[in-house]
Amino acid sequence: MLDKQADSAKPERSLHALFGGTFDPIHYGHLRPVEALAQQVRLQQVILLPNHVPPHRPQPEASAQQRLEMVKLAIEGNPLFQVDDRELQRTTPSYTIDTLESLRAERGPELALAFIIGQDSLLSLHKWHRWQSLLDVCHLLVCARPGYAKKLDTPELQNWLEQHQVTQPEKLSQQPNGFIYLADTPLLDISATEIRRRRREGLSCDDLLPRAIQRYIELQGLYREP
Ligand code: ATP
Image 1 (cartoon, protein in one colour):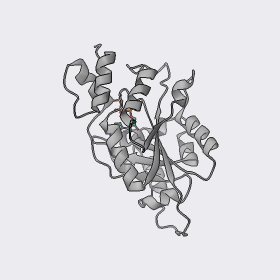
Image 2 (cartoon, helix red, strand yellow):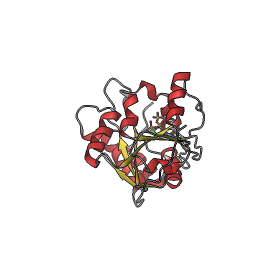
Image 3 (cartoon, helix red, strand yellow):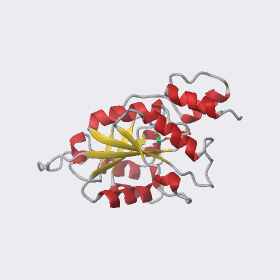
Image 4 (cartoon, rainbow, N blue to C red):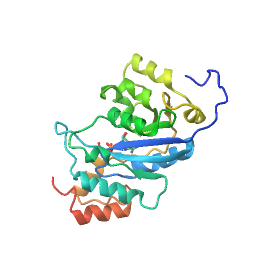
């Protein structure tokens, strides 16, 4: 771990974060852990990035516009969050690393920038396009998610994690990129898959996502088809 390295008293910068997802639909399993994380590591801002899903992958049931609308409803009146629809605007899919590099280019090399993922995404990160370049552009902040292993698949991957891991959140704002922080966020056993299934089966989703999104889903007739 890097915490034990010499800790020169660098001035604290503000920490900005991005949170990508299919958000089909966005739910409390996305929102609550990230809100807790924002408190823990003192995030100034979280930009939600709805993904453009490439055609060879299983397609979201909601359209890009509907997923964007649901994200907007989720963050209405919450100044922590903003939405960035650059991936949805593109006609071709973009990899996360490309989006992060374009944001880094826009915001300059000094800004402390983090990308938020859940524990399941950390476990499959080594399958992402140019995954090893992610830490050249940002930090990784990992939210706990129930039902997923704590250790990475291989000793090499676990070693990579431990080499970059920090346990003191203050570190994150002291350098622009390069650290991994495993956050102690509330465990919410919620997935979009489960919400879509419950909706098809006519079951209540009351505790799983905000009421305004439930109303939107109802009005748009989403997640009805078997
Ligand atoms: P699906 O069930 O359709 O695969 P999902 O609920 O996993 O969707 P995504 O939009 O794929 O949601 O997830 C976006 C990001 O949010 C990922 O990094 C994922 O790890 C994280 N995430 C999703 N649900 C949770 C949860 N309950 N707790 C912590 N992190 C979560």
